[in-house]
Amino acid sequence: MKGWRYVLAGIALGAGIAAGALLMWRGIRRGDEPPALSATDGRRLFETVLNRVERSWVDSIETDELFRRAAMGLVAQLGDPSSEYLDARRLERLREATAGTYSGVGMSLDRRDGWLVVTFVRVGTPAERAGITIGDRLVDVDGKSLRDMTPDEARAALRSAAGTRLSIIIERGSAQARIPVSVERDEIHVSAVSRATLLNARVGYFGITMFNDSTAADVQRTMDSLTTAGARAFVVDLRGNPGGLLSQGVAVAELFLDKGQRIASTRGWLAASNVEYVDKEPQTWGGRPLVMLVNGNTASAAEVVVGALQDHDRALLMGRQTYGKGSAQAVLQLDDGGGLKLTSARWYTPLGRSIERPHTVVTADAGADTTRPVFHTAGGRVMTGGGGIRPDIVSGDSVLSIIAERAWVRAIGTRVTPFRQALTEYAGQLIRAGRVTDPLFEVDRAMRDGLYGTLRARGVDVPRAVFDDVRDLVDRVLGQEAARIAFGIPGAQQRAVRTDLLVARALSLLEGVETAEALIKRVSRMQAADDGT
Image (tube, rainbow, N blue to C red):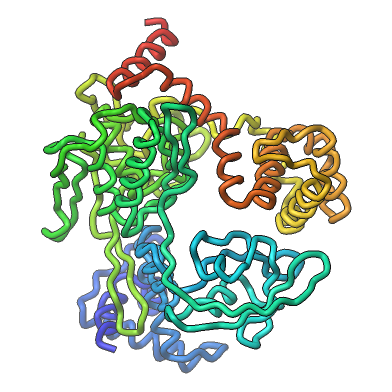
């Protein structure tokens, strides 16, 4: 328990329960500041409160659980959403995510109509080799029924050491015939790159979904492959990327920058936290034009990449302002098997921008933010710090009006699961009727009417006017689901890219452009013309 001893020594400095007890015992009036505590007094206070809770609280609670909750309370009182206590299970998930590998069978599950249904099978994995396909229902694993399991519980049952075997019973099709399957677990690599394709003869596209141990290697392989296929310009999609390892954000940025260019810097209280990241190798692809797509869920290591490339006039950013996570965390192992994820530094772009988003709520009448510091790139472009990274071209991910989208969200309410079930059911009907002939099939009025009827039958009673107002959204999700079921993940990915309006706009900007410099100049001229300058 030595690790816990270090944690508890700090709890007296910040735990809300201890501070509350101090206010009560010493009779301090509301609004007064509590007096400073010595380390000895702080430990004594904490132990006293702990003992009183154990003996006098109305409900019983184990001592070890009290310690755990106190530690969690201390971290919560820091007011830092990026710092948190992780129990052993959450710590293991974090390690799997950052490693990009796990031992299992290689399929994803979701709950549909009370059963766990296969929604994705990775190519080359034990699940694919065993013949498991999208839409199969999992009934039993090693003699244990999955009927009432959550997807997380089933995932835990499927994962274990590579080389171990498990027996799975699945149901397939409307006949619901039960099929026994024997699978040997293996090491599964989760690629950080998705949807790699050529948009036309000279423009390549791919998405980066995370920053794990192999992201830079995955990006390099993808860029090399697309270049070999003829790509001379690229659209890189970072929308929804939550980030991950800072080192991999630096490594991906390094692929596109020249030797000696700054990538990022970190600054913290400890000397080891103060680091300058500088490109060590020349870039591989010779300054070819890049458009990077971002939105409000682009964060952390993803912001390191786009911030560095924007500061050096290397890439054009399109989409919505990024999340604004300008800090870096260290994960400290604790003796109970859990861990402490603690902010250890803040990071800055090459120009010195901090993009950290304030952790306070801004009211609607707060007025315009005129306090954000201003920076200039070597090419003369104006950049701002604070509150995320603003794209060079602000453009939404959707053509829906805000009013229509909010009305749709209110109408669906808590019935998201039956909506997804109705969507899958009707997409299957379209496929069986032969109306889905390729991944890019057109969703017409009759299909929308059919989906609306299925929603009503499932008890999802959305007003027809609201449904019609979000026609573009309906077309997108129905088309995606039918393409996924009929043609698998590759078909769904092809449809997602080819019907994306932001991707289409990026493609038009890259038309006839041969260098990153030419792309930046084209957009600067367009913006100057729009401003009348």
